[in-house]
Image (cartoon, rainbow, N blue to C red; front, side):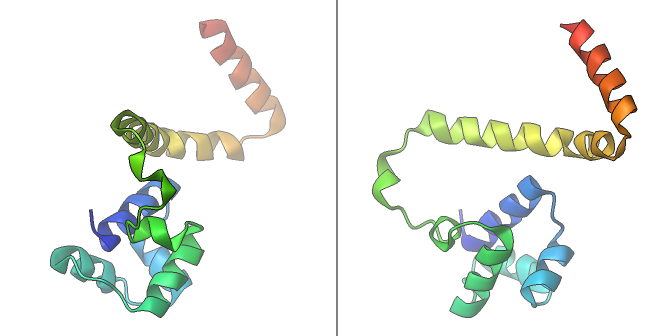
Length: 115
């Protein structure tokens, strides 16, 4: 997977749009789409700004393997599943977060009774 695809995946995981990332890292939103299409690498300063906005090590976005090169395939698959679950339920979690405390307590009681 290339740099821009990793960026796109991280944005999805964090619930950040391409536009939001572009604004925060000060670059054109079309840069991501073009980068994915071309499987290209950004300038070093842009890559660093993006990693800071996403709060992720640049090495991870660049697919530079460190001592963890021997990480198991299953762990990677579990991370993918966790990211998918997270992105699926993030909109619901955001709605719950906006509820007042009493509503949250009531909702949690209902959920707790389901188990």
